[in-house]
Image (cartoon, rainbow, N blue to C red; front, side, top):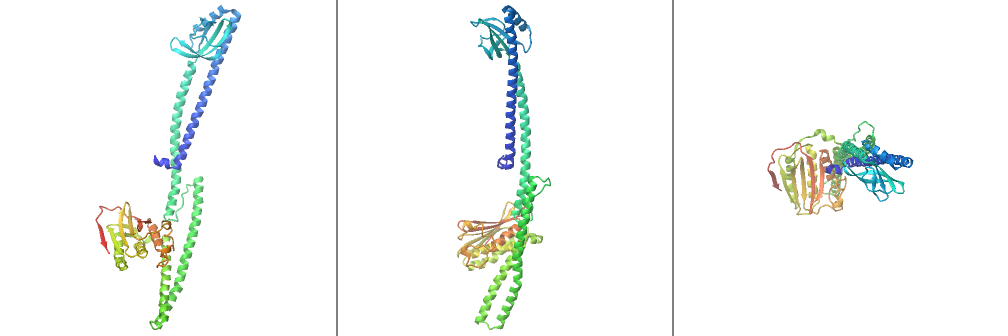
Length: 462
């Protein structure tokens, strides 16, 4: 029920159903009222005609003849027979079987006592025959009431049946709209998740949804082309510059070998070699990210023991981190296995550890954990440093993004970008948040398969 209330598709469908039911009810009320008025007018016409006939007969033949005529009419047993009475000026009924009080002149509803049904209502017309006599002709409303009840029952049943059909139709319409919108939403989620080649589904019926899907697909193709051009330019620039830089490095090495060590020229050449190595490392990282984002490495996927991988990384980084005055603790569950590229996963996890190593003050405690959460494997690196400003959390995974406090430190702002790209390549995601105090980075990856009983953690301290 909550899903129905939250769904715009179902809201549209059921608002349409409510409007349909309301319109049907109003139409039925109008038809019923018009029919009721028509039958009442028909009854009024019969009463007027009968009263006019009897009044004419009174004026022509006198009161005795009128009394005989009323007696004859009342002797006829018919469902639609009329009721008659003649009253004197004191309200006393002179003759006729209509058991009611002397009414006012004119046409109106009157109440009378029926011998079989008791108190009943009729439509009556009172006319003066003479200064002392008043004729009342009335028609029982039973037949109109029977028709009214029949129409109410028939319309009620028809209304309920129409509402049931309308409700079912609204459910079908809402489900159809929801499925069409959900297919677009799922395709968009796949694109957000990194599958830029995903396209909106087109049913082939050429309806408004298909037109929207085709428009979005053309937009996505344009965006993919622009991104591919940008990625290609970045890759081409990095690739083309590596060759001359490699030649430059070779010449610098040769120049260093040709000169005595310890001279100013040799020192300058060694500094230049260091700078060239950093630039080559930067270009290698750019090319690596472009390769990951292209998805070409998927064909090399194989089962990876994440427990073993993360443990090896933690053990290898622990001494260097300890030498810098920080502590590294790790706690890795056994049996964490995913389908992926071991080298890329190692690089991504290493980038998270290095990010905590190089961007935290001395005496910082760094924790690395590997856990199974539902159907996911989580690699988490947590520190108790100063954290990241909330306004920067959404920016630091972009390429070359760096915080102001990190400008003077080594690196180019590509570590978290590569980790995010690797997570997306494996169908997962990179989550970043502040631990207050500290910072938390989590690589969340889908498990290869459900494991058995949870085994004890393997915990160590560097």
